[in-house]
Image 1: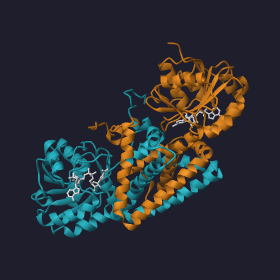
Image 2 (image 1 turned 45 degrees about the vertical axis):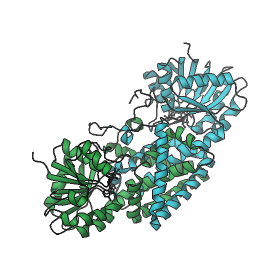
Image 3 (image 1 turned 135 degrees about the vertical axis):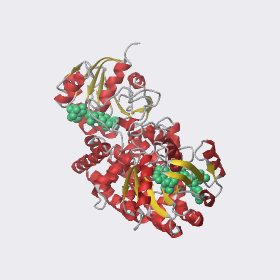
Image 4 (image 1 turned 90 degrees about the vertical axis):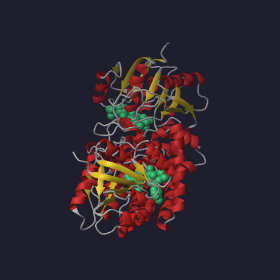
Length: 311
Length: 311
Ligand SMILES: NC(=O)c1ccc[n+]([C@@H]2O[C@H](COP(=O)([O-])OP(=O)(O)OC[C@H]3O[C@@H](n4cnc5c(N)ncnc54)[C@H](OP(=O)(O)O)[C@@H]3O)[C@@H](O)[C@H]2O)c1
Ligand SMILES: NC(=O)c1ccc[n+]([C@@H]2O[C@H](COP(=O)([O-])OP(=O)(O)OC[C@H]3O[C@@H](n4cnc5c(N)ncnc54)[C@H](OP(=O)(O)O)[C@@H]3O)[C@@H](O)[C@H]2O)c1
């Protein structure tokens, strides 16, 4: 098997980039991987742990001669990077990104892409709450979706080749249009993160309940919210600033829905609550059947303290 | 070592009761375990899988001769059971419960407790999204908190003995008063569950985003909300009906806080968002340090598809 790409340049060397580096290496998808990150520290680590053959102090240098460039920086940094690398891209190269928002990235990046370069926006629906070059692992994308949002008139061969790379790392690939992507993600990711952040903030501000109590007794449900509220602040700031319209739309619906439940609680309407909670269970079952989570209790967490749960 | 109790009667044979049965057996904490559940089906399963030595068709029969009675039914069913068992309790017996709300349980149960019986309300902060007699496992309580909320004038020996049982099953025990318990749990469990249910409901009602899309792309964050929204509808209906005041209080704060973030998004106030998201990270760290969760990425979920994550 020949590698999918000869030289891959990763711009940004955090969770997603380092996971890609591990996966491409493990599955033999790139002959050579080079990279750039903002800080000298991250570049040094990337070399040390063997993510890249070479790192460069600027993105412009890193992309030279690469047949695939992957933008793995926060969404708000994409435009600046695109402007910098535009003049240095090899003819026929593919540029993709992994940003969590697509509309804003297309707006920021597309104008800087020269003729003959294939810009194919993308987004792997996979992540953890960790970040940085040490946080990646080769199986992050396995059995996860990788959404590609090719623009009108995209080169089908270039798209097929990129799809092959994603599939090679274990992902399932779907294509959809940019605006639909941003709406779907506002529902499945962005708004859930915002409400998790909010609930964690509420807990922090309570006077009559101390922080140590919140932390000690978190296993009742709060704990799961804190995980999704623990992700990188810069990444999430950028997501909310750049997917504003879709997030505000979904937030409006969320508040409406919450007020209906709140009213049912105030009125003591047990039937309404029971019917609502019964319906939402079905969605959970759907997710397990779709292979996007484990049915093991408590996510299959190993009980703390070294024991083994009967699963 | 002598067992903590001679005969333990479990009323309700679901997740919590079956986990207690497994744990008490494994750690030699009860000479004999008997039980009662509403349905003949659950009673049959409990015998089959060896949760109880004997099961009884009524709670009144089950509690006879027991020195510990544990009420493991939904909060809304506690009063009725208490009325039924009151006249049949052995002198000197301890009655406890595991209900997620304490104020309403005390109100419903205490009036039916005869002289000489020690009623000590309790609540293990441990659970999964599964229910029924087959869902329990012996390590559910390990390294989890078990809150006891003894009433004024409670018999200290009886409390100490019950505490010993909880600790014997691996839990850490704290005591607090009933009202404070209900407020703390409204923050750490009840309100988080309600907002998770709400978000799942929003996703279900979207017209432009199909259910199958929500399910397929759930790994972006939504998935974790669905787990906590998958728990038993009856249990949660009862929690919200009986801890109404504290939940409405916290919900009010939540909505306020959410509106502030929503406004920051609308105004494009990146600094506010970044500062907020940075603060909430600290809470997550606190939970990991307190041993209430794993720091492994993605909760230490084993990647689906049989692979191994580098953790
Ligand atoms: N984490 C997730 O769950 C997830 C999932 C799917 C998609 N994404 C998307 O993937 C992208 C990267 O996320 P991540 O989780 O991998 O982030 P991360 O671990 O925080 O890494 C971000 C990387 O970008 C670099 N960077 C930031 N600004 C830069 C700039 N102006 N120039 C050059 N490099 C810069 C950082 O450099 P330093 O190391 O020097 O700071 C770091 O290496 C984001 O667009 C995010 O929306 C994330
Ligand atoms: N699940 C959690 O995460 C969690 C955590 C901490 C505390 N709790 C509390 O623990 C209690 C039990 O929860 P669980 O998760 O163990 O519930 P579960 O798995 O749904 O089991 C409930 C049990 O109660 C029985 N039951 C219900 N109504 C009854 C009645 N009127 N008379 C006799 N038996 C009756 C059921 O009988 P059938 O099997 O015949 O239907 C079932 O065996 C609740 O008060 C809950 O608030 C739950």
